[in-house]
Image (cartoon, rainbow, N blue to C red; front, side, top):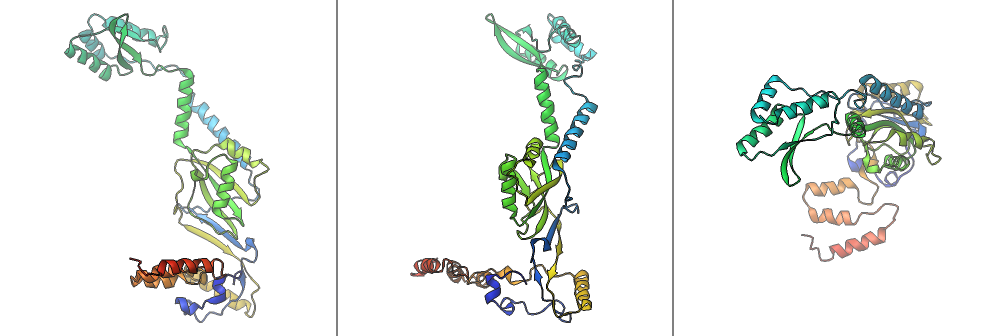
Amino acid sequence: ETAKHDYEQFDNYDDVGIHHYLNDNTPILNGVVKHRYSDFVVNEIDPEGTIATISRDTDVVKEIEILEKSKEENKKEEGDPSEQGPKKIQVTEEAKAVISEVLPEEGDRLLEHIRKINEGLCERTEELALDHIEDKERRTKVHHLFRNHISDFDTYTKQIDGEKKIMVLLKSSISKNKRKKLKMQSDKEEFPHIKVVMYKESIESMQAIFNFSKLVKKQAKYFGIAGNKDKRGITFQNVTISFGNLGNIKRAQTNPQWIRKIKIGNIQKVKKLIKLGDLSGNRFSLAIRFIEGVTDEEIKQNVENISTNGFLNYFGMQRFGCFNIMTHTIGKEAIKQNWKEVIRMMLSQYPRSGVGKDRKESIARLALEDEDLD
């Protein structure tokens, strides 16, 4: 049994087609589930079969610091591109021959410019101005030269003192700060998202996400989960944060607004976001209390039956709703394609508690008065 709901007060199992137990020979156990929220524990299982969990003494701040330290060590091992020597521009013998052919008068200036860049005798941002070439065929050969033989450079046309010039510039001629930013972007693109295991107790999944999102300064729409977990219970599930910030998560842990019903742990940087349905199942731990009228041997027999045979995952009156008109009766009319009756029943639904009954009946009467529902 569970806490009393509307559907338990009115309905008969036979009415919804539940006529037998899976094993009629097994003794019936009458007890109470979810008497305490800790009686019901759910651990999500991801598509690879990993069970989501965190330890009681998990230290999120320490986990983040380890991640940040690992990232710094990787940077040292790989070396910071901004601290490495600039890339040398390679000019093959074939390229030199083409330069002599298409730039007979200015080829030497171009090669000298490349030598100075390689030896650090001029800034890599310095541009070289070549005379404009009027002949279209020869101009095409020049563009072919830069595109296929010395592709480290780009060219564009510019007016200098009233004369057209072909400007030659190094593609990688960007500042040291820009190189650092590009390196940071590259790091982010490799593992751009954050994944955590979220523990919650007696709170809806989306409410937990909303609280979490506020404290890490990220809108809830950027959080990904495989599905909602029960409110009354202890649940563990995987959560991803699109382009999340480790620093914000660390600061959130010391924020006095962080609620005790939520904990996070097992923080990772990942490439892929979690979407609805990204799980292979859930592991349930369930306590049944106040069992009476059965022996220990009969309890053991029940447990062994469940362990051996499993159980159907669509049992219980809660599957049929707690309204005056139950969902399966609407479903029957839908199968019969009796659409007027389906609409009538849907418009006439209200909770068995009676809340909104008069209003819903009034709406149904107005809509169904002329029965013109086509």
